Image: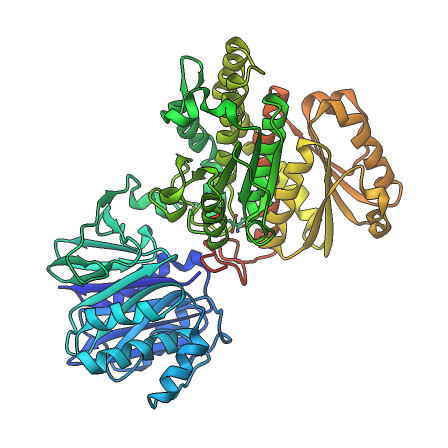
Length: 610
Ligand code: M6R
């Protein structure tokens, strides 16, 4: 979703804003703009398209030398991507950038029309900017104007604002959309995410909701809703700038797939103590867990698919029923939540609006909530009753890869802990699984990475496809759902994941000569059945890429045109190397098609609107 950057300090602001926006490109955008405070006026330059379009426009206008400014990449919600709809939105008195949605924009528009305002864009943001302008025109006090405006605005927002008359100061405030504030020796920053400021400092404040930040070259001050001074906690990120860069890889996605062994180690090792899962959270380590008679895993997209893996492993090991829920559906369908239910929220970013809304709904029903999140201090992490962090490090590519693998790994640990709590696993059995997870998963992923050339060759056969199917059963089906999403989002090939046994109930009518089918077979107990399903599509002309375990490839004659064999690992652990292989397959198809792998069209990394 939209990216916000702001800088005020001793340096020229334009290069800092452009560089910051570049680090936020991964969030997805279709236009960009900046406002710089320039000799007592606010100069705005904006453009539809990529940052290069904005740069071309900047090159044509008089050079902006100011040292305070705000910048924005817009992911269109209200109104098409266009120069006029892009941010910043400026008035006589101020310029404002926004991430989120002002839900009552129509009501605000009516109010403003009454006060004589007119509008040039279709955006909710212009209405917010003019509302603020109306209050500022009365008091000439930025803090007063902001506090009045946010009392009127309903919806989600992260705002960055500069006012005429205070051209060296940036104001910021947020609700339900992320925003950080940072400062180094030479100036202050606001940003949607840490990579935008990481070059300057690894210390930052994650702004609390409703707190207004006033950022100058000399420091930062915070104000609560009554405009009294407020305290905000400094946080320190332990990533370095290299981790947020490509490090020699052609794309972030391939870099992040290659980081999976390390991410898994970092996530698992500190969570296994005396051979069994240990989270260091009272509610998760003791008997408390045994009270839960059913579990809801709630998430979106890839995280929801990790939930399907979680369901399979929790039901298998702990025998507790699990529903996997799409977060955007969850609260609106009024789910039945009982006292003894546990709601697990999965999210890489911890800022996904649908997941956050689902969490709030569950909490309002009095149900215990556990967040599994990658971004420290994010909204989902802060609001859930307990949080487990997946230590994947920054994930920049829009297509989630390593975050998925570590979510699955943590859900395995939760499953083992639950199984111990309710007596479905004894200590020895739990220890054995944990030990094989630690010793085998990173290595198995390394082996999967070494199949890269073979996977690339298979990808060359899929590049021209318009439609494609993934099939599998049981855990393999869970993996197929994610593989299919990965391919769709970055290669623009339409694909569907099907439970192999379900094809014959309708979808098989779509299989004709040459239809590509990726068949996943690692689950022993259903392998024979999956192989029958593969025969059914093969005999109707499908082009089959088989992705199977070493053991099953030796045991069964799997009919196929291409075969990728996953090196041996304990059966329970195949999802990990399998995920890597399927991610690499999607990656190569997208790269072979020459597409923008890391920033697929229409998509945003962190979806902060409902
Ligand atoms: O940050 P989250 O994990 O909450 O994001 C959820 C989805 O938006 C995300 O997984 C999305 O599906 C990815 N683009 C998939 O690669």
